[in-house]
Image 1: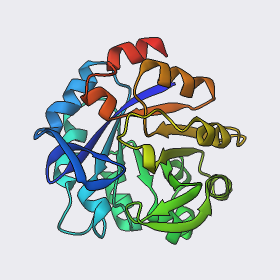
Image 2: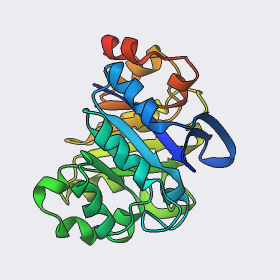
Image 3: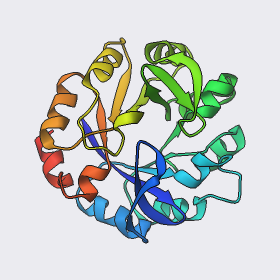
Length: 240
């Protein structure tokens, strides 16, 4: 199981939101590159970097984004970077691959234009992660503000049929709360044959990580729990 520290970037700062709400923003650093280097030294296998400005506006091609910072992170550290947030066109998807992002997480683009996946070579499709941001079993898009029309397992099966194997599942009302993972939904999703589920939302302790591992998740995203000192990345890696 992979331990994946998250760096959420808003207006150039490392922040955490609670349930995706901007009014519940906590700023942890004004130096995302330094944070990435810290996680690398702690032994992380891969880092999850989210461009919140792009996710919450019109996407990666707008003027409100943190693309330059993300590219500096990719250039600075030696471990892989998984990029998420506001990638809503095949051009921006390809450009991020060209800039050596190891994996790219897409949500809105995949749900609105699933044909995009057929326009990519197989090796790129294998490095796409589909985000499943769910509220009460319904997958949300456009910065968690609009229902996609898919239920969780419907989405997993739909995209697996298009060659996707990996999914980032976030229970929105637990994100940033430290209230524990949504084990029921994660377990349900992990039971889909062949699906690799990355757990996100509510993780607050090593015990939570073990629970998520035991139900079959392939990786876990850690955000607020590490910034608030509740989980040590090195210890988490050694445990799993």
